[in-house]
Length: 216
Image (cartoon, rainbow, N blue to C red; front, side, top):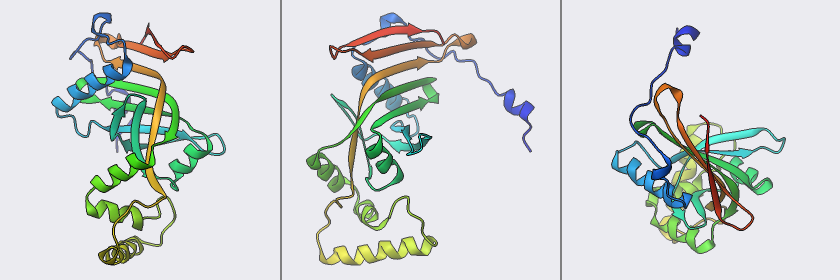
């Protein structure tokens, strides 16, 4: 049994890096790309994994881990089943948030904005680039719906596998991409004594980015 005293005593002093005004790239998407490359170079485990927060129909927040699949000029791209819980929540309320955490670099990035559907072509192109097994899985899984047991899911997969021996594999209409178009991006670098570096970028009415340093 792990006691609350032990949990409360977990702490780490962050001394690996600093992030000062002189380090800022004034386009936050370019700054994100720079940090993302550093995360890849540092061999962070799944650097494209992020927490995606959406809102349920009753206003209650929901969050889960999703994988980033592209960084575009207008935002951050991920793919999912449109009929899943998150897909339905996004359709109802397109406001969402992402959080990336790269502990190996003692860094975090928070992103907020509006989520829109990706283009049909981009969704088709990405779907066809996936392994065949993943393509079949997208057809087979009724994502977020209750199923009786594991066997039901495997049987659905095998059924689709047989079907696509006769038919070409195409993207199902219920599966595709979303783009989170950011209006707020915040970079957090852990520092000693909890005096972390935080810089927040906000998109103004003129569609340009303004930044400020925040207290940790």
